[in-house]
Image (tube, rainbow, N blue to C red; front, side):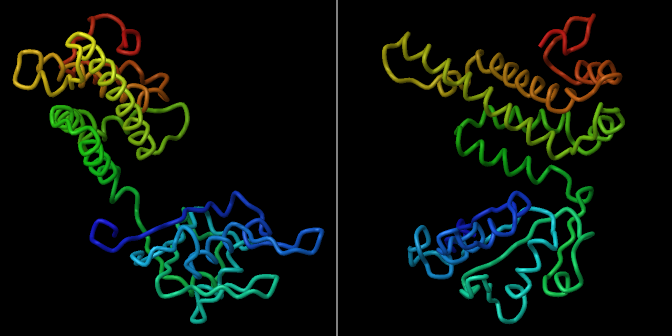
Amino acid sequence: MTETGQETFYEVVNPKAFISRELYGSYTKAGDWKDGVISSVMRRMSKNLDPYTKESIKYKWMVLDGDVDPDWIESMNSVMDDSKILTLVSQDRIELTSSMRMLIEIGHLRTATPATVSRGGVLFVNETDIGFKPFWDTWLEGFTKESGNDIARGVFYFAYNQFLSEANWEEVRAYSPVATIVPLSCVQNLCSLLRQFYFDYKEKKDKEKKDKENKASYYFASIRGTPKEDEIKLILEAFFIYAMMWSVGGSLTDDRRPFSQMIKRRSKVRFPETGSCFAYF
């Protein structure tokens, strides 16, 4: 929303990581009131306290990322109904103002009471319908802006289609991991590894070029359109393969052999005929 000109701030809280008094506040032994995590954030948002003092802030979101539990959600019922007021044990009342929004992200509603469900708008997102491609597209766009490298973007884009497109993922899904894995988590790990590999390599090459020419220089910009570009593309694809091997294939045991064969079959990077890809990378 910030990108559309509506400056937006948000706070993410995992309510399952705290007990009730740590979320909503409690009295100390000295009889003083001490705000909890949720009450503190809501108070600052409602009264435009730091860091929400800028007049340009259009919306303030509180994201509660954790499964619904009666121990903590019941206190939020008054926030979600027409009054939009959080009432604390201290009798303080914190208003959910017109600029504030609340989003509760959960995995299920098994422990939610009818009072909670009836007060909120429920949006069900089926993981299998959306998949991990939106995350990948967003990450790749952000990576391109951060790196400014269209060469890397092109290599990673085609490598994704080569190895992780919907049709190819069906082959990966057939493998049996040692423990249940979430496809989105695999892709998140892949992206983290890929980013680290790229920027470590870039930093090394920029330093080598600077030491050689005795001035600041950017390696990837210098090899564009030269024979060296094809060599670099192969290295970047190798980064993707290595990241995929351990983010997707790292949890495999008996199926490492067919996974390795799939990698070798689709990759431009040449592997020895014998042994698995895990033995050489």
